[in-house]
Image (cartoon, rainbow, N blue to C red; front, side, top):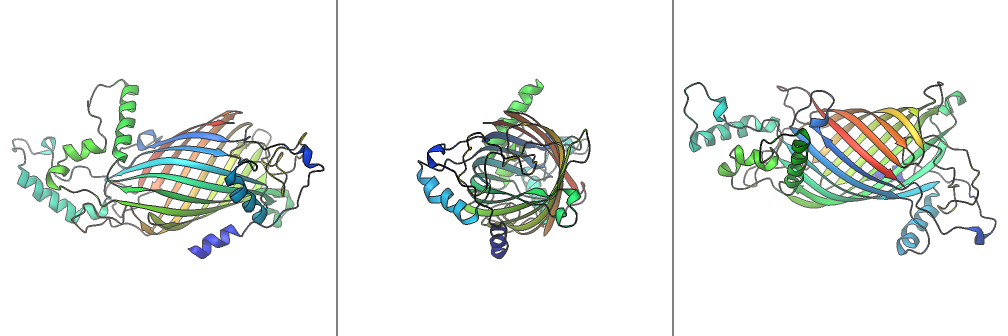
Length: 413
């Protein structure tokens, strides 16, 4: 895994230097094309087959910027050295604060009152205990535990203008494409606490938007555990952990070319990713396709080999079209397919309760398919997407797939 990450870091070769004629003409730097985004994922947002289980809710707040090189200690110690070593066309930094909440698919491990046979008396505590124990031994391993993740992540990304992979076969498929590799460090908490409060707040908002008055206490994580008797049967909760995780991702354009008049650009990129740490150990491959009016050339005002600043009267026009973090008018559709081999996942390789040893019977591989649309009007961007996820556990009675919708709003500056 470490060798894979090292290979991804070294994939980008050097680029030609672009010198300034006079250092007095050099501006102080710019945060142009920065981005602030809020992203909410929920299976209630799915375009079809929506539910409220397994992946229940996720919220991410992310800030991305083009670092100023001068006048900051971080710029001198990190970005300048980083740029001198790898010579990217552009570098961005980002900070993300996020949380994810996961719940079992079967949130009723014993029969509720409305599930009893006609005339059958409500279950006693002992009967609930017995049914719960049977579910926990037999059915839970095919399900997943309640688990939450709260984290902060810092990421640095390098962007390069390079020949597309297809251009090595024929120039008709475009000569210049985008290469991006990113390194990230995440620190946070995985366990049963705190994530439920965010999930509950989101449910309150959704209830108010729907104009509903019930349930008074929204059916979030805390509601499920209390109403289903978890706290009365087990006094402890899921084993928790504080830790760190490192990740790396490489994206390389396979095709970046205009084919059609009304959909002027097609971009196909390959993805390689890896994670290593106390939360997840995995490696994955993916493919992204973007079709439509993509953003402007991201390197137009950031010549390779120079400081990341806007040159006066920038005339550089060469470079790939992208659908990413660049201020311009754009509208396009996209789809991304990913597959992963997972050696360890804290959310599944964990005990349901601290005093037990039962863990989810998970798969060693998983995959997902995401499709959606993006519209960007210079300073604002809206993204809507739908993800079809192959379930990570081996349970098959309630279907093979889980569906999640995502709403993302971004402001560019």
